Image (cartoon, rainbow, N blue to C red; front, side, top):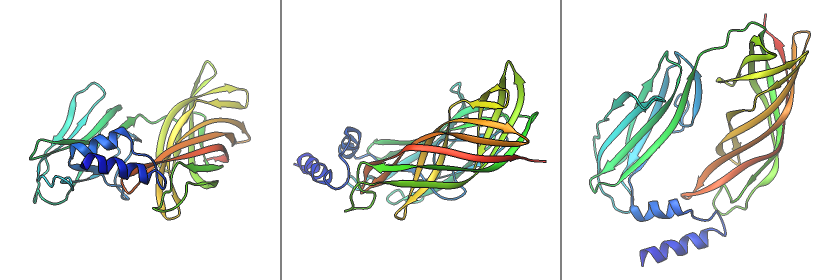
Length: 287
């Protein structure tokens, strides 16, 4: 009977929000405990890239399933490198297994690699849930050509497949993301390829640029950008294809951008998309 009622609730809610996925339906039936990385200033809650030596902080919250109310039994926090080697593991203390537990962890390394950050919670009924994200530590690019700093701007449209506030309609409206603080480091040149790094609002991405005289064609890259729609914070993964012209210590940029994100509304995922995006900017060489 409960399965029928939940299926009916998903069907009804789809008229206002978004349809239930099979994964969400299964999670409901399995009655797993809850665990997630907390989105809060100073803490990492999404996939990220940083330079080696950067210290990262994580805040994680775990709680019993609202349906089963099975107390929490244990929490394991693990960091694993790209080769599968565990470089950090801890088991936070659960003060009261019947309510929400919040704990923090930190990590830094001088080894460039990609690391899987995993927090797993198990309740007394043996049900397990996992929250995970990926962090890439990178070596910095040496600025042989120079460092260029300025702002990027993205214009486009934002669409959703459901209301991001309960009872509202899907969104399809213009999006203007201006004043994106950006630094591009142009390093060594080999076979018309420039080793480069772009740092957007503190998040570095290393890639290459093909050089043809003053014209540059950058590799496709992805960065995260938080936007706010009607009071709701949404993290977009933005993919950029960009070209540049370098003249008189000024790097003029132009290209296209698209993005995806997800926001939960009453436990249902609503997909958010940036479409028809263009990216422009003018960066000046630092002395």
